[in-house]
Image (cartoon, rainbow, N blue to C red; front, side):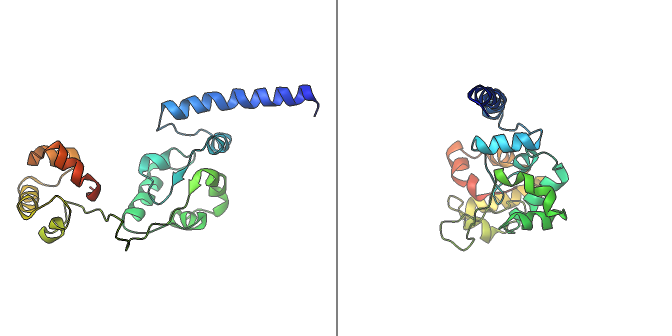
Length: 182
């Protein structure tokens, strides 16, 4: 390829990368449309940590359904860790070749559940009084209020509803939010 051909190729590459870069930066939920966009996103530094990905993260990838995304999130929230692409393929009952093109944006990080630094989120809709009191910031009085309120009015849909129903301060909500998973 001559100098002129190389310049045209680089210009075409820049022209195709710039709009995608803008879309990725302006919309954190932008769903990649093709495998070419997956490769460009990887080149721009986009990564999805498969062991901490939420449904919206999985839905950014072309070809994954909401059911598949929910299934992967449910597995990781229950403690299943994916160590490689083969694990994700097995969890979805898909051939490895179907997921291989997504590999450039997937990141497989290991999280030690037994580490003292690792937070084990608790579901306030199912947690016992004792479990709730183990969360920093939740004393026995608040744990009782959480349990009694859920028994009387039903499950909490999310953190905002828990905060509102129990009239928690913003500071306390910020303190406990990393320990709760709905």
